[in-house]
Length: 146
Figure (cartoon, one colour):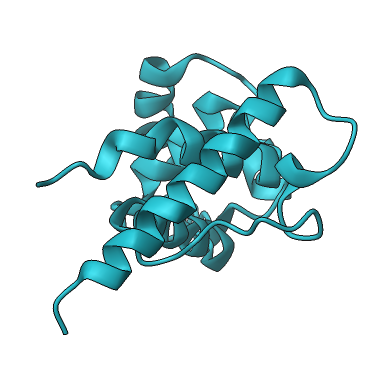
């Protein structure tokens, strides 16, 4: 049975907290993952769907999620092109691995901010959900045919 999205909310919340992203930023990075190269117009086109933030492009660039592929060249009449950085691609790859049950989310406070002490109630609930998600993955791995 395909139930990849059963724990999507848990994985999404974990990634947002771990990387300090808003929901709109995460949506943008997920969209850009399949775009090899894009220009600012393509970025703005999708930004209208996820919620306008005039600083998002510069912020994602500054934080290392987007990098320049080709600079603007007025003489050759070439527009600037950008791409998702290695950091961005790595994060999306991890999301897919979590969804497919190929990776466990860390249950240590060193690697997972949800497991730090003195967190909010919502984070404690998410912590419990991470433990449940990992247990489900472990059970699937034990019952998987070799």
